[in-house]
Length: 154
Ligand SMILES: [Zn+2]
Figure 1 (cartoon, helix red, strand yellow):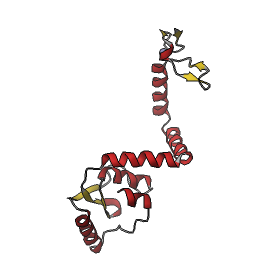
Figure 2: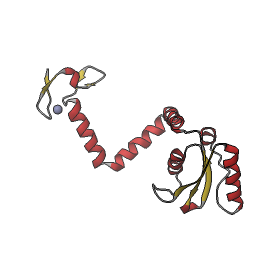
Figure 3: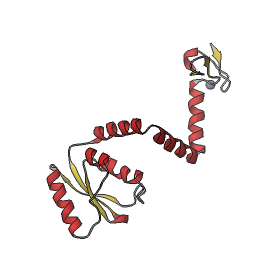
Figure 4: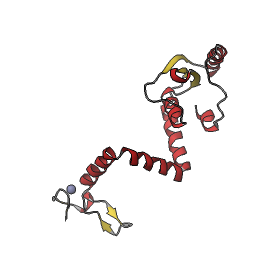
């Protein structure tokens, strides 16, 4: 048993995470550690963002794998044509939810709820492509996406 320095409750060693490569136990129990880190995230949104960016920079392959797996999980088998109002952009995707987020990641000026809209849903990609190119011919932006990662996954 070990007394937590934060909540002062005696708890089993299994309630503490190890530090220093498993040599020592944390002074705070797991539940206090979680509470603290949650509070830290809320208090430091900028640092948290930087933390994520650093992680992505240092672990590009790992992040790509995770993102890929997540994307594949979210696919529902349909192809969607979507429109982004603020850039007048039209594109297609198998996964509207992820597509929306990718635009955010790729630095386009798109925040949640600023005009991402599904225009139509198709069983076949060919159909979706036809609608997309029709809309592009009407003057909507889009097409020519050179990002191989997106191309192969969306
Ligand atoms: Zn505690």
